[in-house]
Image (cartoon, rainbow, N blue to C red; front, side, top):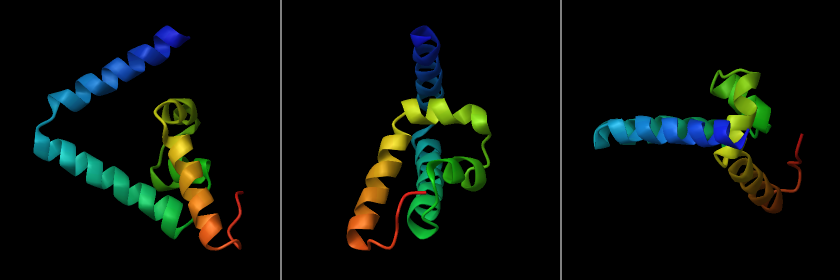
Length: 90
């Protein structure tokens, strides 16, 4: 299974490196807008952001988690909860 995840990482890095700097910035900004909208403005769950904000399916749960997004999502939630305790994890 580790070989599969390693291959996904290699594949996504190769794709990233094939883009121009402008294309990389465009992708980065599009992703950050969605993360900000889903995690900060809507305060959605990890699945909500993946499935409803990004429009991905359940098959993206693990790859997104392995890329670090679940940790980022949880850090955002923890910070928002500390700022305003009425927000709790779903």
